[in-house]
Length: 294
Length: 343
Image 1 (tube, rainbow over the protein chains, first blue to last red):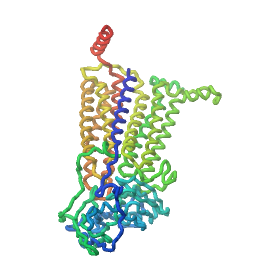
Image 2: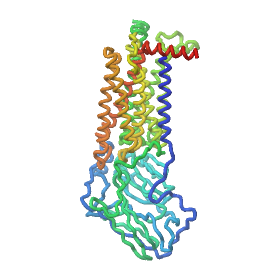
Image 3: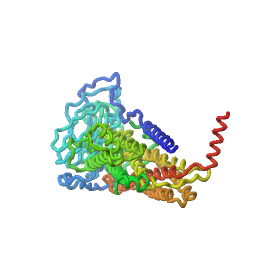
Image 4: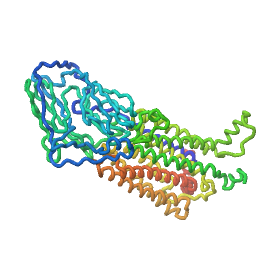
């Protein structure tokens, strides 16, 4: 009698756990401001006409920026020895200007009336290098095009572990001991933005934007940025700054004249509210990850 | 004193087997803590290969590799202990098999575990720990998919429950003749215990899924968090009812009241730890993570959850050992069966 009841209990619990775990299976939903990575079916190849312009500007930080916090590197003495002042780099503020802000064209219409999404652009032959140096990533924020080669190097005297955690692209995780050869990677689909982390050193993080076009830049320490080679047209330009779970976005409409320049100045921080779209949610919209993830 | 005499000192109790079972359960509990530390440090992918770490048996234990490789070492030890324990249980059968084939000269003196169902439970434990090891490797190779990671965490609790059950079944208190009692009242304590254990198990699955759904740099999924809170309420109601029923109906039976009181105390600690774990997680979102208070309290929450489950399992097993359906229900069931047969 007892054994029979135990068996029934065991079977019941196993069945329930399997049902609960099985419910976690589901299709991944592609997301991102500029959609998936597959180009439109009738996409045309873009060829520069010589009348391209540029979008430039500066990103400001209004209010008092949070002070960088020192990172405890006791877990790996090699990090502390190489970079004794390692601190958080969420807010790179210099004289009221904000660095490490991604600025990119989200959508827009060219002067000939076509949408930018109707065009395909050549993948740059240049390689973006993401270096692990002093137990943090350099650059902290960067942008590449779909299929553009990304090289990951380890300049530290310790082992690292590079882990891209995208939503639209496959997860990618590789260990890279000190002295190991550079690793290469590229993304097949566009995605704003792919978080990068090191599971070896949990404070290390970076962001890589993957775009279908080359019109993106990252603000320098003085907050300045410049996007060159932009065909004349009217565009929605987005500035993205990290913070919280998904960062904060600001949008702006700009018109690029033929062979001219458009200005787009952004502001983040406590006092910056214009056109802001904070996407950090401590209590996000109702969702069941067991029903939607993976 | 001869081995056989020692075995018969408390009925069929084999102290060696019981102590080994306790050692295995203790090591498994430590393994659960080691696994929770891996999750709290987001160290599961500190190395991308498995079973080696960065291609080595013993890599330099720096950064998060300390937690991940440390977890693998503890897991290997538990696996080895489980193999030894299973061999210990089947010692007589193994020796007889070897003796029949002429591989050893004499029949075994040591009897091993005489009860076949206990030996089989040991074999189930061995199968579970092997499956758990493979699941651990799979979750690393697949970059920690939620379903595999949650299954790994859940199977860990089931394995712990199995080792605790083995310790119970080989204990002196289990083997000693315990007076049986009739269930009192319409609500059978045994079935309330089962309901409490099953609810705790489901709560452990929800907790494991919640933990693996978001690392500290991401917000917790609200609905899953609310489900976990609802689960905590359900567990409190069921386990509280179980303890109250036992204390009221069988207050003089320490065989039942001890685990009931312990489970209730652990539940109170667990509820406190759950609230503290949430507060420490959301308290300093802009500080470099993971912070030690968050890690410590969250790991304690996982460990205490395992203890609540184990204690409830012990309580459930003990209620089934000493409680029987009361005469009225037995007569009613017999009459019902007769009526069905007649119809």
